[in-house]
Amino acid sequence: MFAAAAKAFSQMLSPPFWSVLMRSVGLAILVLIVLIVALKRVFVWLAEAGRMWLEPVLGAGAHEPLMVVVWVLSFAAGLVFVAGAVFLMPTVTALTGGFFGDEIAREVEGAYYPADPPGIDTPVALAVWEGVKIALVTILVYLCVLPFLLFAGLGFLIFFFATAYLLGRQYFELAAMRFHPVADAKAMRKAHAMEVFMAGMLIAAFVSIPIVNLATPLFGTALMVHVHKRMMGMPSRVMPPQRY
Image (cartoon, rainbow, N blue to C red):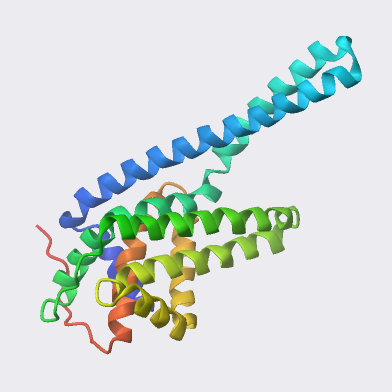
């Protein structure tokens, strides 16, 4: 597992990956900004709705104090969402991973498994739809985990393990779908659930590192290509990535 992670990480620094890295990081930043703005607007709308409900109850004299409270809460929410970007990154990478999975997988397969039959690219719509489903599940799981964050140790452990499961599941299935129908890829993931989860823990550790986590789609996809190959009983024909 660690050997696969080392291969994935080293290939991220190779020239063929730079183009994918720049586009992946750019899309991740764009999605992150959109998510933060959307969440802030939802929070502002809820705060304003609360003000409009409270104002008639408290009387006209409460208008100015409530406006100040809404402004303070909106400003604080903006800071919290920006500071909490690390919690949004698993969702962001789930959304962006489907766009670049096949391109990354082709690079890994060509560098380390040149004698093996190449995988077949997954239709972009299907890959993106799988990413959207995982992103929605991620948001739902994190909303369930949120109350436990009040208990720092327990909350962060649950958050980490949930991230490991969700991202491990997504990136493995994206790698496996290049060689198997969707149903078979999911069945394979379930049959090797513990190994996929262990690899997911490495991805969860990667996505927890600020700035570096913008490259999670590259690391996650490359890692799971190696994991899938090992499960298929195809030992790596060790050919390190070309460097120029």
